[in-house]
Amino acid sequence: MKKSRVNFKYCSLATVYFLSAFHAVAGNYNEETIKSYAAPLLQEHQSEAEKKGLEIYTKQYLIDEGWKSMSTTMEMELIDATGRKSTRTVKKDSLEEIGEPDKTLGIFVSPTDIKGTVMLTFEHPTGSDSQWLYMPSIKRTKKINAKNKSGSFVGSEFSWEDISTTELTKFRYKYVGEDAKYWIVERVPTYEFSGYSKETTYVNKQNYQTEKIEFFDKKGDMLKTLTLTEWREYAGRYWRALHFDMKNVQNNKQTVLRLSNYELGSVDRQNFNSLNLNKNE
Image 1 (cartoon, rainbow, N blue to C red):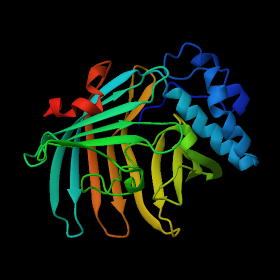
Image 2: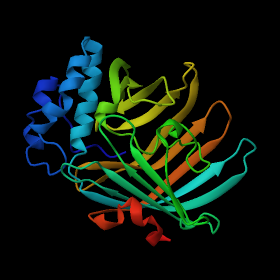
Image 3: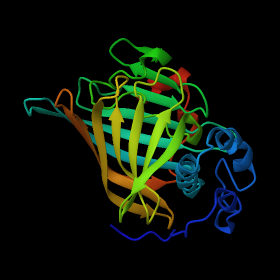
C-alpha cells in the first residue's frame, strides 16, 4: 500500500477545523461550515474516548471532501454457502455538490436478467437516506422504505444501509484501542431502522481510511465483516479501495466487489433524478 501524502500529526478536534490544508476545499464543507455541521456531535461526545473517536472520523471526512464527481466500474461476485458463484457488473457514478446531499447512481449492465436495473441514493446528514430502485422487468421505480434498509441489496451480503451511509453525523464514535497500524473505533448508528447495534472499525493511521468493519446485529452478535484492500490514491488526495470483501459469519455467504476505471469529474448530474431512471436501460 502506498504511503499517503496526507500524513497529519495528531492534534485536537478544534485544530482540525482550521487546518490550512482544507481552506481551499470545494466540497460540501470547509473549516467554517464543518463547525456548525459537527456541533451536535461535539455535544454528544463527552468522554475522552468518544472525543478521540470523533476526531479520527472528522479528519477522515474532511480529507475526502472536494472530489465533486467520480465514476467507476464494479464487478459484484456473489458466493453462496456451498461455494457457488454468480457475477454481476455495475457502472457506478457519484456526485458531490455544495449544499446538496451526496448522490450515487448504479446501473447494472450484466447479466441479462438484471441488466438495466438502476439504484439511486441521496445521502442525508440525519435520518434515513432516500433510495430508489428501477426494475426494467416491470418498468417501475420503487422507493426503498426506510424500515427495509437492513434488507439485502439485490441478493448480496451488502444491505441497502451498507451502500449508502457515509455521513459523519449518522454515528456516535468511541476510540477503543489501537495497534501499530490501526486506530480501533466503535461506531453506533444513530439513524432509525439501522440493522446494526454497533460497528467496530479499523482506521489506518497513515491515511485515515477505514480498512475493516465488523458489523454486529441487534442482539449484539457479530453478523459480518467487511475488508477493504488494494487502495489507490487519486488526484493526490482521494483514497479508494478496489477490493471489498463482505463475509456473513452467520450464513457463510460472501459478496466480493472489484472496482476499476475510477475517473474524476466524469458524470452527468442530470442522470441523478428518480423520475427518469428508466432512461438508463
